[in-house]
Image 1: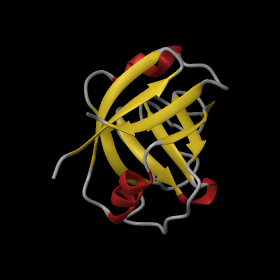
Image 2: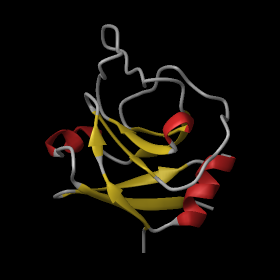
Image 3: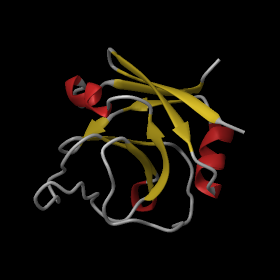
Length: 124
């Protein structure tokens, strides 16, 4: 079953697809989620209100990846380098569970500022 979600961050809206991991299924079951987004380089992250265990955690990700960061109970949208990145890599603060991908160009999130409202919901 395809788990398509809509992410709205400030004035930006994009579709994404969750994968079939245990963490992604838990996020799907918790939708809708609304929070105040924070930024860290080219990453938006926010607390999603539940804890999930590390699940094949990755130290680097690709632009467009969606992650769950266990230490912060946070959902992360990666669209470019972070302060921890070396060269062109995208490196989270620490390992994340990759839970899906943005459909289309993830760089649309570059205009989102810290403090923006972020909503995750199931696509209709």
